[in-house]
Each structure stands twice: as C-alpha cells, then as structure tokens.
Image 1 (cartoon, rainbow, N blue to C red):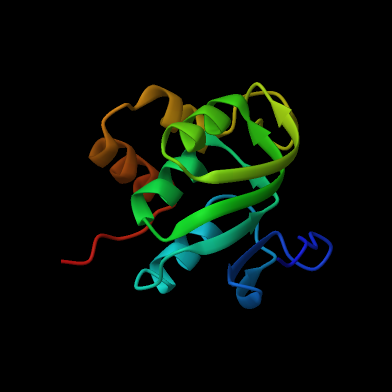
Image 2 (image 1 turned 60 degrees about the vertical axis):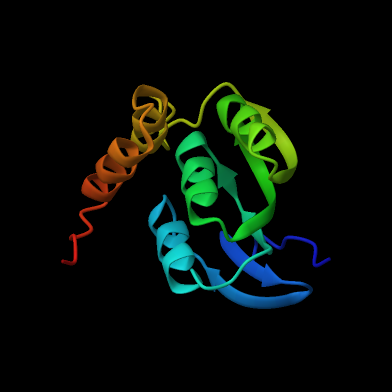
Length: 135
C-alpha cells in the first residue's frame, strides 16, 4: 500500500498500489470530481488530507471506496465510515472540520450534520459547489 504523501497532493485515488488520480485542490470539489470520474471502479483506496462527514457521506454514496487514509478526520466521519464498513486510517481526529480561519464548522460538514436524508444532502452539497444538474 502506498503511504500518503500530502506534500504532493491533497487527494489521491489508488487502485491497489497504483496511483490513478491526484489533486492539489481543497474542499469537497476534488473529491466530488474524482468520485464522478471513476464511478465505474470499485475497491479503491482514497488518500484525502481532511475527512469530514460530508466527504464520508459522498464516499459511501459513490460505492467505489473501500479504504480511507487521512491526516485529520472529524468524529462524525469516523462513526459514519465505521457504520458503513469503510476502513479508515487517520493521524488525528477533531470534533468537526472547521473553516480555514477556525471560526466555524465548514459548510460541507454543517450540511452533512444538518441533513439526514441522503438525496437532500447530495442536492445541498451539489448546490453549495454550484454543480449544475445535467438532465
């Protein structure tokens, strides 16, 4: 298994020991894009620098990620991943994922905590990232 190198990327997808995707972007958008791009795959390993509940819920919905490695994970994400059988390795945990200035819970985490119904959650995250719905 490839050890995460968060100096080279903030997010990476691995198929076995082979790196198939990486991104240096922040927030949920790089994860969203990777999950969409590789939606036909399964059993992938995700390296994501920060893992909050919104990311965990997107990962579960995608059905393509078997294992997550992260620097920081929120406690709600830990429980969610455990409940859904997705293996997790994390260096640190936090009550919640905060905004960069640490003044509030990040928008994705707030949506994930406040929206129980999966389709409503998915729609609110899509709207937050301004991703158009393709008919």
